[in-house]
Image (cartoon, rainbow, N blue to C red; front, side, top):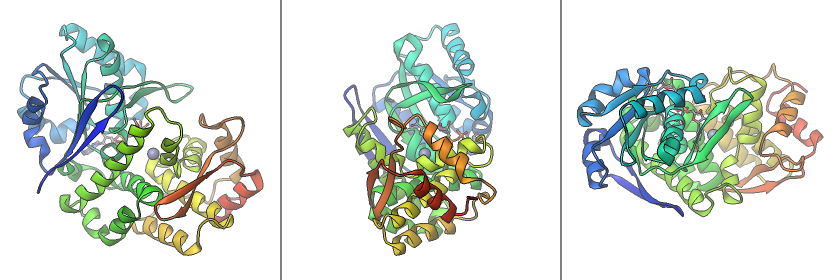
Length: 361
Ligand SMILES: NC(=O)c1ccc[n+]([C@@H]2O[C@H](COP(=O)([O-])OP(=O)(O)OC[C@H]3O[C@@H](n4cnc5c(N)ncnc54)[C@H](O)[C@@H]3O)[C@@H](O)[C@H]2O)c1
Ligand SMILES: [Zn+2]
């Protein structure tokens, strides 16, 4: 199958996202075509490296491999320091390339190291989760968590290449795969009726992780994120629409201390909350709400929600870092592929919406 190439132009850099089945096999050729030097550091984690290290190591011989521990709790500055240590002790220069091979955690941590070591070295993303392929590897946000909150420390730093190989997803645990797919549903619902229809039509192939089915939905997602980022690298207007499902979703993650839901699962609930609020405001038809709920349901069961109280979830929404002047900005769907942003939702309305999707009042 042909490869898909999407070029992103940002104020600082123009670079490609390349999506192709088996791209990992020819990663060295792609890097060479882009004129990137052979001086490479690969950052990955032991889980990803056990599955894919042999192939990637063979294609990028001579690279120094830095494995960081697996998991969100290692997305911290001390992990970045370990990467700096490896770079410093190998005398890495400005022309060195840092290649992140992993999910969003590896990409965010490695990207922050690449952004800051010598004030910036070449950065290449090889995302290995669906979430990373459609979201975290695109857009240039890199960074780590602080004990007081997620992603509090970071930078905008665009990579030189994002190399996406859907075959890498074959080894992903099912729950991680589905978690990424909810973000794809987000892109469809908020930006593209065509993508949404494709998800409905081709769900069997997608869930089987057939590259033939995955490439179009990954490509559409990347195009959407890329075009939003191009318009709006630093998150004002259009970038807000990417937050569809995230206002309630982040709150659900917070009240369950990031332990119950994978990010995408919380977003799935968040999209259902937004759709319910939109129906209550009569900006969305119940038929379209049902189409969204039904697509989400077809992916499989979500972790429970009915034991959670609406009150603390609303409280958590108020504390989100994106709240401005005490007003929650809510992205509400209006049709498949389009949204409106409201900032005048009161507590009674929010409570009603949360209860309608199953929370306790
Ligand atoms: N930078 C951004 O714009 C942005 C956007 C969204 C999310 N994020 C961040 O991304 C992170 C979440 O990323 P994630 O969902 O990819 O989680 P993750 O990086 O923790 O990966 C999930 C799990 O899958 C494993 N894994 C990865 N690839 C695999 C593969 N091919 N086969 C088998 N196992 C594999 C990982 O080792 C991990 O255990 C969060 O820290 C979040 O803040 C960043
Ligand atoms: Zn998200």
